Image 1 (spheres, rainbow over the protein chains, first blue to last red):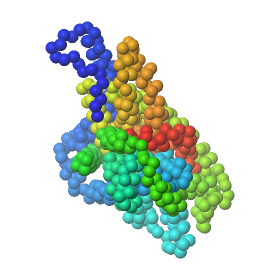
Image 2: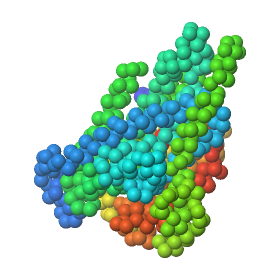
Image 3: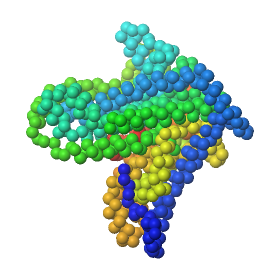
Image 4: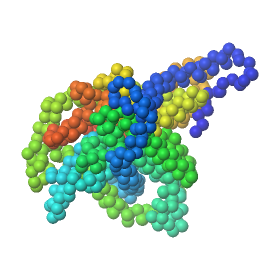
Length: 309
Length: 311
């Protein structure tokens, strides 16, 4: 991305006239004024807590008093802590199951919404987009209401059809399934918009050429459409993955990590240790691990994307 | 700052670039060869339309069920057989939520946070995005990388240290503590940067030749030009802030400053959930966004604009 606009600083050795000096000031000072506030916010709310978090992770800090350095003890304890592993692996399971579902749902819906054969596309688009407006907390509430074990709509329908009620909240795996459905329901809307934009940009001539060559709809989709939207696919997968790894609000409302602590995800684990038990140092160590995981995910996916391109 | 709403700009950029390339290659679709296409389309029209609307119905169902339930009296909520349409319509849940749970106060708090943050976010994102797009020096290049980095370290990852910072700054338990840190968003900065990159530099040069000062160029020419982005980001920011849970959760302690999301969470997290109140309160909390959305729809659903953003 070239952003070259303002003339660069005068070349070394050139005679600097007064006007040149003035112009230079203007090109340095004006952007500084414009980015000033955000630079301060960046330093105060990003660099500072980031550094503090790293610092805390080497202490047994509990929210008050002096910092007492204990070296790598937190990390040693963390890597032997089965609840930490449970939270981390549950987060991975959740991510691995929910991201493909979100991808398929949003791409499928987007493909239907750009197809000229479908009637009432604008209205359908609005209906499917509505969940975007709803906060993760309320998404949790809505799905808790739908899948209530004793009072939910879904179990009522199952019972009416002659089945026996499904233990949506007392069985850990089923509870996770509900969380995954809810995440797909809430996550489709925005990704769908991205896919619609990408699909509209696929040259129609290419699709027509493929058709003339005798490719059927599925082959056209596989060999023309999918490669055409690869950058968007990559973006949607990366974003959804990072989003899933730090899922917090929705699960707080939906299952609160239950049944028991079976579905406690990693951010919730950090919140519980850091705030409810105020083991700040220990929670910070867990945060550092999560950060490394997020970074690794981003780097792997970036690399994968480069290779393909 | 680094909110759930942020995505790594590089990636968005690549996608946007891809889209541009595709646009170039698109050209004018030929008229020939359309007949077979059209016949196929007519044949597929009915099944595809049905499929689309079945999917739309599946997406609408949870929301519809929720909405209709909120009009049922408490006694009807759990009485089998359940019925989709309330047998008896009542507004009691809404009234209870509004009065008993001090919801009016939470509503006001949330509105204050959402509006003030949105105004600040839009303004400072425009400033920063413009500077990053139109001034190419070491400082702006470095800051671009910094903004990019914020997307890799979301607030969720640094909960405790963020809390310490808020406390040390004296922002704990105040609305300012939610507003100030949320002003910087990578998404906002990136949207504006992307937009200003497409504004021709000639405009800038001729204004300079006419003797306009750098800041005047920004405020008089560039900012008015960016109106569509401005609206889009405003709606996005309003939605992020209205629905935000994590910042209010760590910053607020006193219930009188609670925002809607924190209040809702305390209702749903209770030992015995008061469902009539919870349903009413949740529906009330959704309404303002639905209203904003239907007024400014085109700024959100305009697919071209969304191509460069994140959720």
